[in-house]
Amino acid sequence: ILIIAGIVAAWVTYLASLWFNHAQSMHSQIIQGIKRSEFVPFYQPIVDSRSKKVIGAEVLMRWQRQDGSLMPPNQFIPYAEANGLIVDMTKGLLSHVFNDVKQFATQREALFFSINIVPEHLDNDDLYQRLKGVIESGELKQHRISLEITERFPIGDLVAARKMLDQFYALGIDLKLDDAGTGYGGFSYVQHLGISTLKIDKMFVDTIGHEDNFNAKTIEAIISFAQKSNLTMIAEGVEDDKQVAYLSEQGVYFIQGYVYSKPLPAEQFFH
Ligand code: C2E
Ligand code: CA
Ligand code: CA
Ligand code: CA
Image (tube, rainbow, N blue to C red):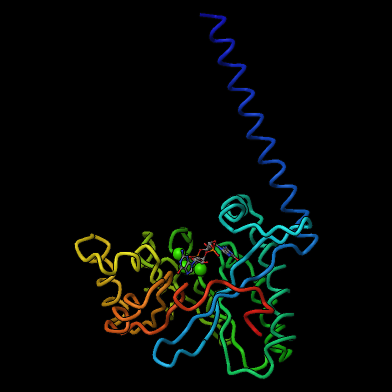
């Protein structure tokens, strides 16, 4: 028994060290990536299905590594969010976005660029000062910045968060609720945070055409809640015309999804 226990303990130690080394290297690689400005934006168009015009874009982070590879966010964002790295990564991401807008987006109709934030971004005024500087410098021209926050993360102090958000609102920056209906914070966030827009998650859009599914009832509930609360809606993960038709019947016209476009690198989005 002692021998077996010894072997088990050795294995547990070994596996823990593997995990620890993996985490260590992820951590230091991300820090190196931040220094090298490797966290870059892709832009996914958000389209008004009535006019087929692009009204804005969600900024989606990609890790452009020195070997030329492009890493999707599910492979590094959860780690970064859990380990206090995401705020610095967003900072670098924004520098790319402002450069792109300055370089490419001069002669266009007004667009909004929607940035994913986490509750930590509301803990101090770094992000606010950064955006204030850029907006006051006039570099964004006719374009606007928008923030999206997921309801999957708890916000400890809604009153303090609202105070910070009111400063953003004064700059003309609005707040969208991401992944609406998937978490638990939704109703209280809408009530307390001054949300302008609900982003209906792909999980619900996927049920369109499968009306026996429980989530199909949820999408109806989300839409009717949004309408009664005078919130704008954006449907996310829309992949086909049937979904577009259902959504527009329900009064949801702002569409983000492969049916119109995947997320694009700057040169392609601004072509
Ligand atoms: P999200 O904020 O819910 O973003 C929408 C995701 O759905 C994006 O995945 C987008 O590419 C994908 N998507 C959009 N339309 C379709 C469609 O029609 N079909 C399918 N199959 N997928 C579609 P992506 O770019 O891989 O990002 C995944 C998640 O990573 C995001 O989900 C967000 O939670 C996180 N993320 C990405 N960029 C950032 C960032 O800058 N900051 C933070 N904190 N999180 C980010
Ligand atoms: Ca988002
Ligand atoms: Ca989303
Ligand atoms: Ca989502």
